[in-house]
Image (tube, rainbow, N blue to C red; front, side, top):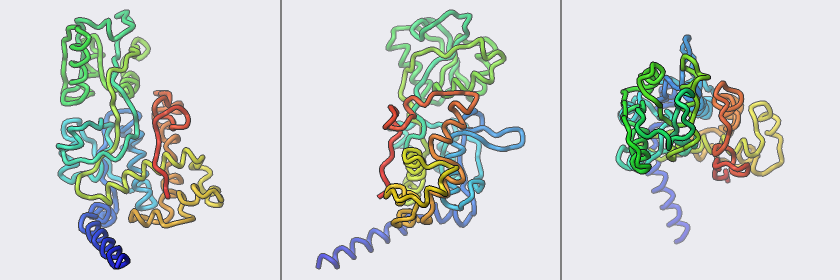
Length: 336
């Protein structure tokens, strides 16, 4: 009786998965992943003059494509503004949103989205001119601050000034590009966004060396990819691509040595790289899905260093984005 009940439960589960697992099939049939990206933020999502995209979020989407197609270039990047990013995902214009987007309760519950993890732990900060002779955000009483409207940044700014009993003149703009240009032109005393964005935008200023990022971080901004509600298989695929990259870094599997690591006797490495078990097949992917990701794109640490870390013009320290066993917050469930 127990065996029959177990088989019935498994049949129900498989039927439910089959009913909802449409996105992966759609992507495979289309032959490419549609990825909603930033389009204007160096280090996270930015095309060059020839249309070649680079960035941490860009490489995440390439990793998803590598897992599915064994080809990281089978991605169509769709540049989205902060205002239209959620609509693009909800409508099906994109399969995954990877656009330095903060995971909040309202976005998770009221927009029909599922955040798949945190690929960058961030927090909001302030950029000011050195000539202002300000060393702390608490010295910005009465300041005018440029900010992009329709973002968590705008609300955080108002909350911070109110809680600190400081007066504020908010100067809002539809896009980050407009806000940065206005700040550079002297229309505001400060510019505020996620700290990672401050490092990126400072590179675009007329005299980057004349500006400093203040030490205060005034919010939690867990940035991560999102998918639509209603397709658990696709949610699992996108979620586990990030986990695979983090686990690969923790186990010392890199783009250069992944082929050699296939010979490893370490049980964790064998499971991750598919030489033992059927963990890729459980996701609807191939046995070597992680070999594809790491071999074609890299582990989490590699894409971090290349795009925003010491190998990039931004030179952001790993900090909270270090591995859990090295003082950071990046921690992935095991493959087993």
